[in-house]
Image (cartoon, rainbow, N blue to C red; front, side, top):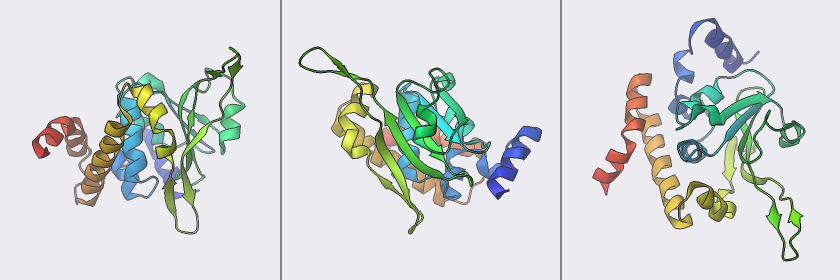
Length: 205
């Protein structure tokens, strides 16, 4: 069992181990990166459903719930691929929103956007396949990002302009990278910094 899996077991036994308490800990542990963390933060804050799928029990969904305006919109369940998730009926997984796929070590292997169906010119309903938001490049052990390809759809879901959303993702990613680079392991301090992000952003601008 991976170290991440052992920490998940300790979570059930009586509280998260310190390094998997916040989104910053996940960045430090290279389970995801700051850019995807910033996007998940924005989606959760904007009440867009986020579903975390994993072949093993992990605390990642609980960490993302800590960023969400409505924690009930962050769900989790089994699955090692997007195809596994799509085979599950709603409401075991959301009809639309972000799907985050974890590998057996608790790292994000890919992230996807489930999109609503479209109506074509003839009035027919046409389903849309999921869009890739990020995918892990194993050779470099990094995430490659593709959210730029669906920024208008993400912005519409959040009630934002695409240009503003792109800038916000970048600013939040820089902020989270900065937090990850600090020596603090105090979960309350990290949560407080994230909670005060709007004020810190205004002060910086």
